[in-house]
Structure formats: structure tokens, C-alpha cells
Amino acid sequence: MQTVMNLETNTHPFFQHLENYQEFLPDFRGYLTHLKEHFPTYLRINTLKISVEEAEKFLTRDGAILRSTAVPEIFQLSPSCKVPSLSYHLGFIYPQALTSAMPVLAMELQGGERVLDLCAAPGGKTGYMAQVMKDNGVIVANDRKLGRIISLMSNLKRLGITSAVVIQSRGEQLTWSHPFDRILVDAPCSGEGKYRIDAETGRLLHARRGRTNLSAIQKALIQRGFDLLEPGGIMIYSTCTLTPEENEEVVAHLLKKRKAALVQWKPPVESSPGLEEYRGKRYGKELGLAHRFYPHKVNSVGFFLAKIVKPK
Amino acid sequence: MPATSLDSWQILTYSKQAFLFRTPPERFSYADPHFVRAGLPFLRNVAGFLKPTTCFVQRFGHLANRSVLDLSLHEIKQLVQRGELNIESRQEIEAPGYVMIRIFGNSLGCSLLMDDNRLLCRFPKALKQIFRND
Image (cartoon, rainbow over all chains, first blue to last red; front, side, top):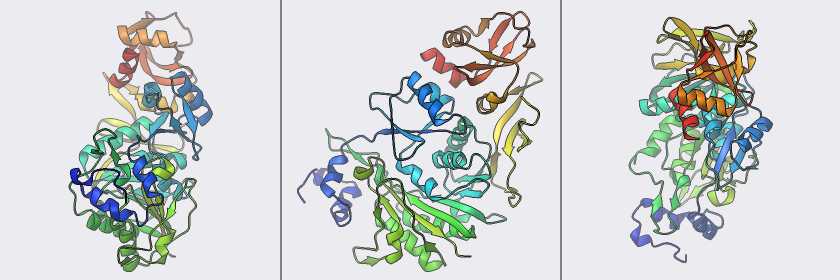
């Protein structure tokens, strides 16, 4: 690999992983180049409060220049524009990564379901779920930490959502009196999909430190989520990291422990299949049905997603 | 707003507030010791009067069919910056009482209309800040 950045001056573990990621990252040089670019800002129109057509007019009046994306209610904001403050405070928009919409789209929500969002804060995906459901049904939005719960409640309030129940508990220990039709486990992770490199200094930006026990926590969360799922129900496991240890390995762990199955899903943006094996660890053919969204291919935060069903 | 507008919702009261909660599916039960909040803040007791919350107004204000005032951006800035605004008498709006303020046809929040045609700003701090900064 031709050195694009000075690995010796960067001590974060991510740089040590990068060489290994050449095995699966398509267009590796393109990925390295893209690392130095800023992610675009995407805005989701909150159709509980305003239609997409009216929002476009309102946002334009509020100073925004928008470009449509593969998801009808999500727009890319021109780099020269700031997030329009009136539209934001009225709850007409929610700034979110384009790829973070994928878990919600994969859930096949119709409205009327009982949904559990196991790691909900700050509420971007919770809000999108409520929007897709037309605020019909119920979403139990859980998170562990009080500070994150407060920002979750603030976002749900601003978006005008009436169908959410907010609870605070450790997701891996959550119990409930009945199963859920849909569950989202958007697990805490190392966040490599968000990492950027400062083009001038070469420093790693948005990097997370600590939480070395992530894989164990993720395995406990996915198992607990699956146990709370109604037979015939759909669970989405997602992260915004690239490492297979927090992605395919976690899903493979569930498949070993429970009668779970991955299912096919076609996302509206480009993705690569999940890895069936990596550096001597075999995850299984089924993991090929999972999806990897790479930053340089979708021009958004990197994501992993597995759509899982519980057989009836 | 029409009497049947909120038929699909329940009103929950706790923490000295009323919350609007979408009636859940029959198969849902929400008795849980980790409960923090359900639904959208709806009404608050302000000096003995029930006032609709700003978030309720912004979500459901389009259903209002009386006590609505459409103001221009300039008027809203004056309302926020001075704390009050003199408006022309409107017979169809009962004073004193809360009125819903709209901008560009969109519900913004509530203000209190006095019987001397003074409109007193009752927007929350975050909303006032937007009109102060512009």
C-alpha cells in the first residue's frame, strides 16, 4: 500500500486496522482520499408536520439550497448553507446522515406496530420511525444514560411525536410484558464510519476512545433484542463502524445462540454485502445478506446493517 | 379545533402536566418501572390557566379554526424583541385569552391577547432566540 498518511504519528488503533481493511474495502485508495473530505449535511423532512413540497418552499425561503437524494424525504444541504434555524426549531427538519435512514427503511414499518428502539438516543431513527408509521402505533425508546435521555426527549418533543414512550434502562437487561413486532438495535460502537482525517494536520477526527468491551455489549444487546421479538417479527442490527468484530461477528454470535435468520433487503443506496469471513474467522454464508455502506461510495457515514427475522 | 380532532389520542396526566399520547395498539402494555415519559407535552398550568404547549401548537395548530393570528416576520420580531405588540382589534378573537400565532401559514406558538389589544409574547426561550438573532 502506498502510504497516504503517516501511520507512525497516528497512534489510534484505527490506523493499525486500516491496512487490514484493504482486504474488504472496495476502492481502498478512494476510501483513503475520501477520509479527508467533510461529510455533506443531510436534512430529513419531518412529514408529521409538513409535506416535502411545502418544506422545500419553506426551507428555500429560510435560505437553504437543497439537492434531492435516493430517499424522497431526505435532502442534501449545499455546503455554503447552514442548517436553517427556524425550520429546525419548528421541527420541520432533522439533520441526519443519509445512511442512518437505512435501518428504519429496512424495518418495513406500516403503522400500528409495537416497536422497540433499544439504544434510541438522541432520537434521529426514533423520529424517523414515528414519521414512517405516521405516528400510529407505539415506539418504546430506551437508552441507558440520563443525559442522552434528555436530548432524546427534546428531539421527540421538537418533532411533535405523540407515539413514543421513553424509558431508561440497560438494554441488555430490559424485560417487557409482551414481545415487539419490530426492534431496532442501533448498537453503541467504535464509530469508524464517522472518522475523518484533518487534511492539513493528518489528525483523526470524531474518533472514539475507551469502551473496549463493545463487542461483548453488542452481543448482549442483539441477544436481548431478539428475545423480545415477536415470532414473525423483524429486528435490525446496525452500527456506524467498519470493523467486522462489532458487525458480522456479533450477528454470527446471535445465529449460533438463537434460531434467527437473515433476510434479503434492497437498500436505495449503494452497499456491499456483509463479510462471510475475515482474517481466519468464519461468519457464515448468511452474513452475505447483511449490508455494508462505505463512506466513499455513498458520501455519508459508514454503516453496517443486518435484517433479522424470528421464525414463526 | 373541532371536537373530534384528537379522538385517536389519550390524555395522560403526570408531573403536573398533561401529555397527548397516541392510543397504542391493543396488544401494548406500558407498565414499566423505568418509565420516563409518554407522549407529547400538551397542556401546562400557568397561573391557574391551562396553556397549550408550544410543541402541541406546532404539531396540531393547523387544526385550529379560531383564535388564530397570522403575523408577518417583522411583527413577530417586534413581539419577541419588545415582549408585546399592539394589534388591531379583532372581534372574532376573544380577549383576554391565548391566541395561536402563525407565520407563513405555519403555527409558531401561543401568545396572550389582552383586552386592550396588546399581545404579550409567550414563546419559549429557544424560539425567541431565533427571532432575536435574525
